[in-house]
Length: 314
Image (cartoon, rainbow, N blue to C red; front, side, top):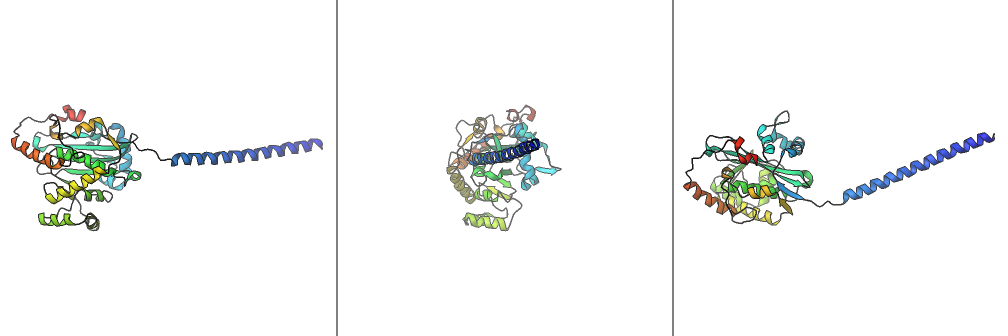
């Protein structure tokens, strides 16, 4: 009988200790979860860097394109496969000049990415051309959802358009997405059906009025023409406003140097050309300068093959 009582007591103590241990473990993990949540809730200081993409960024880019319907429609043609010209941008540090026997018909694709602590959080792609039968194109603009409404799209637009202006481009087209329509409206993109008088009336409308019309009467594509005074004035007004409200960010050294480059004559870098991001008269002075240079230029030198082109290998 005594043995039975001892055995019962031991079994009881075992169960009691086990229950207590489970309670302790439960509270330990509750405390750990609470600490983890507090740590994760501490705001991390952003570290934005505007840069060129590289091959290591391709996986992040693919993730965004696959999970954003608008980007998927732009970049995926068949079975979620990227076209080779897009892949070439990552292999050539965001700069890809297409082969051409006629220098006038050159096309240069450029992509910039915005990083936070090294990770790509946004990108913008331009397709610039010297072919008079084609128009330069703002091919894509994307910011990851948690980073939207912070002015980062404006930041990328201003610096990407440095290439547009310094390369002697004057007009541009874009196929807008719902998310990017607000930004394009601010940067003076407009529906293509207007004549000069209609365009003047369009830009006399308030920014919100224009956006309402663009949203309610969507166009397949929009245009921007800096030769038109009304368009240029609206563009310059927003550009200056955007620059004044930039968040803190850095520019990679290679990109900082290239922002002053005509991508079609990249060896002939000007020593002190104005930049859209830093000079209020950047658009006007560069466009006027390009007119003079175009009249004087009679160069016959053919452009190097892209395999030997340092622009693609830099």
